[in-house]
Length: 194
Ligand SMILES: [Zn+2]
Image 1 (cartoon, protein in one colour):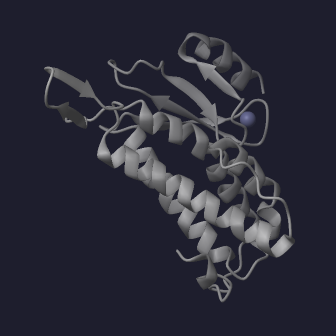
Image 2 (cartoon, rainbow, N blue to C red):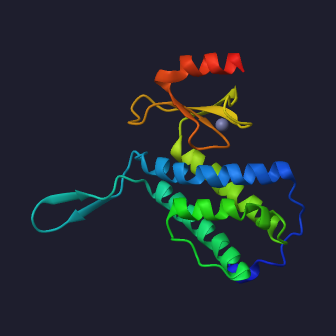
Image 3 (cartoon, rainbow, N blue to C red):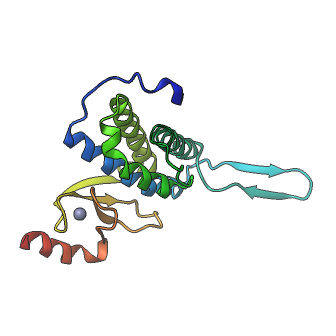
């Protein structure tokens, strides 16, 4: 994933539907990044110290989740770097949300880039990996229908019972179109009324 290696690209054509998927994935990555953190593995990393009997539990994050989070950051930083280099822009802050917003703003430009096929593959791959890590055990996504507020699709993020976060329905296009489980009846009426 050397940035210098990009550019030759696959020359693959990125259609409007792929561009929408790409933008949707990039928008979801900050949430997935957070949700990866929310899941402790059965064997969390433990740091043991000698001396005073004290066991420090490191951040309750599994090695797999840490790896996915690092990969998300690396992929976003790398593609943001390509945009800032080639468009001679100020680099965005290295914050996941800032990187995601930055790449969404330049998604159309990226879709026309010779390396467009690569970004579609990489973002798709990392999104799938993050989803698996964030929502293991089939807790996961169930398609619900069309978003009443936009052209996006709704998916229910079903979380396990021991999950501190509530289940919610989210829109694939806009991260702020979300309905917590307590408002699903209201949402059902909005979908029917559409
Ligand atoms: Zn929506």
